[in-house]
Length: 97
Image 1: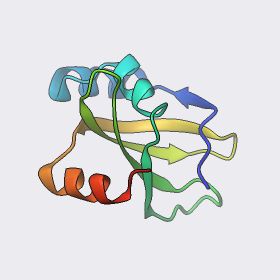
Image 2: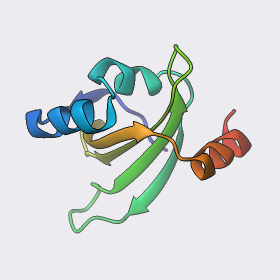
Image 3: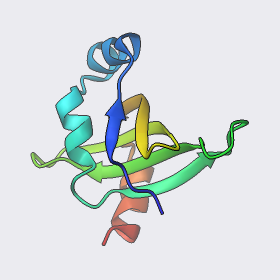
């Protein structure tokens, strides 16, 4: 079970997410508060620090896909955030609670 207790942001990644994908930090963090759907994307070489994708919706209704490394401290090291693709929206709709 994935429980996010905090976020880790790297300035270069924040710049890319904001300029390339138009997603703000607050939007990405906000998405985690409304029952996101988590998928493990890749097992890490470091025990307990796997790559995940979270699909969810912000309070404003925007559908986002956020990729992150789930740290052993229960923090999410955000790698990327963007609008969901249509395929991801369908997947999210089937699995959201």
